[in-house]
Amino acid sequence: MSVRHALLALLSEGPKYGLQLRQEFEARTGEVWPLNVGQVYTTLQRLERDGLVASEGEDEAEAGPQKGFRITPEGEQELTDWLRTPPDLSLPPRDELVIKVLVAMRVPGVDVREVIQVHRRYVVEVMQQWTRLKENEAQVDLNFALVVDAELFRLDAVVRWLDSTDGRLTRASIESTPAAPAAMPRQRRRVGTPR
Amino acid sequence: MSYLELHDVSKTYGHDATEVHALAGVNLAVDEGTMVAVMGPSGSGKSTLLTIAGSLEDPTSGEVAVGGASLSGMSRNDKARLRRRSIGYVFQDFNLLPGLSAAENVSLPLELDGTAARKAHAAGMAVLEELGLADRAEHFPDELSGGERQRVAIARAVVGERHLLLADEPSGALDSANGEAVMRLVLGACRRGMAAVVVTHDAQLASWADRVVFIRDGRIVDQTARQDVDDILARTRPS
Image (cartoon, rainbow over all chains, first blue to last red):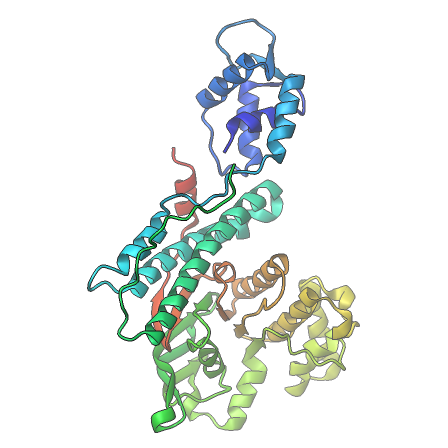
């Protein structure tokens, strides 16, 4: 999550104080991503150094609660460019869950499907918690609803992957009994868009 | 108190070599005011579980009790009355009668049960209003969107003094916003005291439930623990 660009976005609406920026950042992200005040000031100092924001009011080296900031034309350009730059969507090189399932297939005496179910239950439990929050709060706050939806879709994809893995293992065990241990992928394939 | 109870329920189709165990020793209790989701791959027995819970099919062995009354001791007529009065069904493909308006579809179960037409209509309208469909009451199913049709189907399932709502993939082919609307209605019915069982393969829908049970090869293999909202807040807001 780019705190830097989130702050630029908030400043694109008009000049603001550091403390105000922190409050607004948390409110806009449905209060799901907490931000400490030190992080806000450090980021503001860097933005100022890079000429993307300019400070107003008292001219101190340290940014303080009374110091106001405004976005510069360079900052506006940076923000516009960032909004249209695709985020890094490539698969993490070693997705922990994928590794665990691959390993579970090779460890003698381990029931892979039982391992899959342990993870499936856990992910669904986390989804239930998010959904409960949505039931209670989301209708009043659009920002919050969007953040919770993103989290639910991401977790849903994990459950789908587990379901699909379960299905593949079932088909594989029907087609080749007794089941030979599945081979680890021989070649590491690059997944994702080159950046 | 559990409104729906399944004790050691098994269901077998076919004989000998062609025997298929759709359900094997299923135990499930659903309290009034709670929603239970049943998740599992296709062919796992989840739809069979629903039809047996709703008295549409008899188990090969085991006991089903609805509202404290055992189904095994009931005549066909008693079961039909129980279904009309106490159980609402929602299916993936809505199953609305095309020749009846939304309001007529909703009040139909009450009329079939002997409620006077005027009274049944009033009860139907009250539910449609509650679900935000009052202005669609006189429309026929083919004049409604998919989301509206499913909301009418839910209205029909909760009209009158129903206690048990059984839903099989209730958001079917609806988009996620309409799917969420459907689950909010089911949950709303539970919060007003109904017991609900929702069968689905969709984790996002299942996560609306108070409890999710996982079914595989006709057996319940796992279930989620009761969820506390504070857990997730603690997770996202370390302080």
